[in-house]
Length: 267
Ligand SMILES: Nc1nc2c(ncn2[C@@H]2O[C@H](COP(=O)(O)OP(=O)(O)O)[C@@H](O)[C@H]2O)c(=O)[nH]1
Ligand SMILES: [Mg+2]
Image (tube, rainbow, N blue to C red; front, side, top):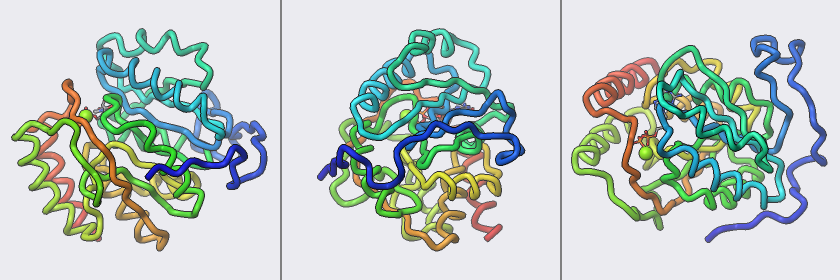
């Protein structure tokens, strides 16, 4: 069931635009500061010219009709295709769309960069492929405003379903990944869905101690959040595999498994 928030959000005072200043956020260059909003969506992007415009368009359309203030922040890692060009038309979008860079490569590094530079009350990330319906955010925001540390989309929570299944090789890799991830997070059924939202101040504090740059970064981030004592909740989603994944079984699969072992040994 999707919960819809009341027209006046009950989680804070009326929106007062603020700048992140050097005195409060020393490590963030002034050029990267963004006004404070209720919610920022980070979209890590690497060579996403085919998928990202549609995702940002439907995200902006959805956010513009919501009661909370929001922004979309694309974190690009020197894409060699036309990712930046296809985002040009969003300069005048009804919801601010920012594009920032990240000197370290990898989805984890990009998401960390987005979170660290955010001043939003709630912050989270979505993949450029729109695999999780953006309408899931209604429920996510309701749960975050109840005080959860993290609300994460799950393809394995009761009520979840696959609209379009992943290819067999990816499913097999996913099975192995889950076995290893459970060494660190036995209570989380799906650590890898690319749709996770957090309490902003807590996420900013936690990412400063994270180091995994690749696809296993979610496990490190969730493990650090769970140590903090506040609850993480999974929400079931209707998920669709979208062609054009940037995940390479050979390159990213092995690296992710090694990262998982490192994370479980470092605890
Ligand atoms: N900035 C940045 N984004 C990345 C990098 N690698 C992957 N991504 C993004 O991370 C997301 C991963 O989604 P996807 O490629 O569909 O992977 P899958 O859903 O796990 O198959 C996409 O938005 C990618 O563009 C990277 O090195 N840098
Ligand atoms: Mg995908």
